Length: 218
Length: 242
Length: 65
Image (tube, rainbow over all chains, first blue to last red; front, side, top):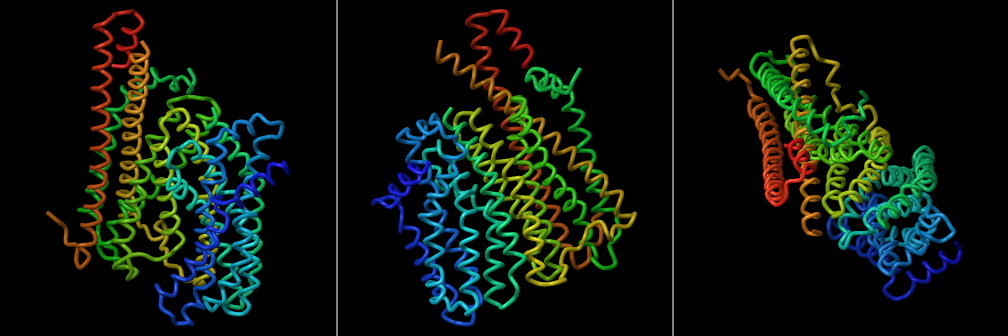
């Protein structure tokens, strides 16, 4: 399993693997926002937490179809399915690799981009924390979506359509934590709920992902 | 004689063919009576004026929208556990109906909200969860449409339906939380049941029966179409192989 | 005939109009698909029947109608 993780990480960091693309996309979203809503720093401060969450979510979405598509095309997914480790573990490792190359860098970059959007002082800590807790759920849910659409030739857009409604609870609680934190209110309740959703998805969704992969390989 | 007998396509076709005319006549009669009664014969509400008449389409369509998803969940589970093809096809057949009903509920809600709340749309948990339900329907139908192999499509959409149901419920509670977090106590959502007097109650009941009947009728028609098209595909396949 | 709907007439009538239109479209699409599949199936089955009438296919055709 560790070997699989190392392989996936190496593949995504290599040229064309998509690593860094998500970060650049995140930067672009944040850059474009003031052009769209105007440079008023009070307005930007109000929506900064939400924009950063939306940006992170969309950047995460970009690289989802790479989680499984390449392995499906060259047949290594079938090898993994017959390997001694269970497919549920494979799905979990894939999600972990996706998070390490997408969710984690996005979380680390978000506070820097927060400066551009005039994020209020107390918001930085809560934004980073909420992204750190929330983005694993995005990766796990995304892996499920990728598993559903892996057999399709052009599944990218369909993948987004399927995954985005599933992101709603994570986004609501994650952005709520960041917003309350930025506004100086107590964010512990949404934080607990966000952590609950993340833990539940990590615990349960790999089973659904593995089931979907099995169906697609049959 | 158990319920599972009807999972056999041939038995299903025979039974549904026999039942369909009755269901159709009953559904359309109930729909015409319920909506006609509601539109022409009920008095105006003293607060809402004549917009109260929208309730006869809004409430039944919303009920069917939710229960259609519930039915898809049950049929998906039946397909995954007991492998009855008709069950999977019934889930596929129900999705466009549910989506249409969700759309009707959203549109009539917006039309009602404009004069009553002064806005077409508010990010109230109830409205928002219906919008998300609509997105779920779209994703589900898109997945069905995208996959060529019908058995694979049936299984993957079933998995999506089950996972989607969990997330739909989660979203519903998240939205209630989210809305309260935004504007405390500002309850835009008028509960339909709380201000329904007897004059409005009976036509509403008939309308609900009409919408449910319409749903059953359409599910039967569409499932029969799906069964036939599956058979058609199988025959063509055999032809090509021969 | 049409009841007095007061100042909300446009809202009420448009709500009913949109709903009825959507339902009719849904019924129309469902029926059209149903008729088309039924015809296509019948054609294929008739073609098979004329080629070889085996008891098996005959029974299937009768039952599927």
